[in-house]
Image (cartoon, rainbow, N blue to C red; front, side, top):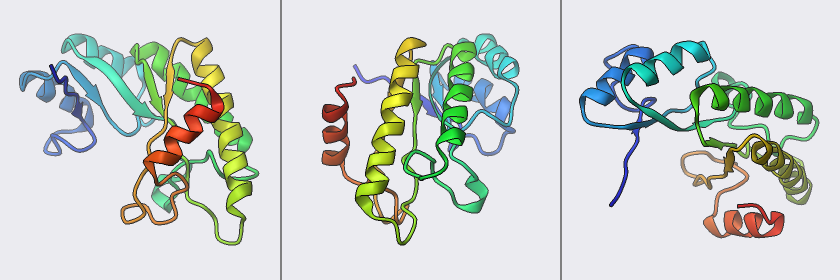
Length: 171
């Protein structure tokens, strides 16, 4: 039987973000996801989940400067410390929200940098994030995103995602 989660970043736009939890529960959802929780206190989100009988199933790790067009930090050379701090923040939120999964965005490939170098940085960062998540009882998710919606996104093919998981030996 399929199970669905309401994506609160996309649905219920007529409500303020924290009010979307009640709207999702009222429509019969038992699980929610959204892009990023970091603009809100974890305790406030946890209370909305509890009050509405919802399970948090997924959110994204910090993506860098989203408003400036960044779509993840994992492949960005020289941003490893910021990436690791973001993963630690995401794991902290995941613990409070009892969320089993964190999506880690690959990032946009900067012009003039060899793809192999970006790929090596990406894989090292994902491996580190997966180790941290495993220790915290969480899973790291990767998602290929097509080049039409996110031109330049490093991970843009499903076969590349499967190959990454195989190379890392991580679930």
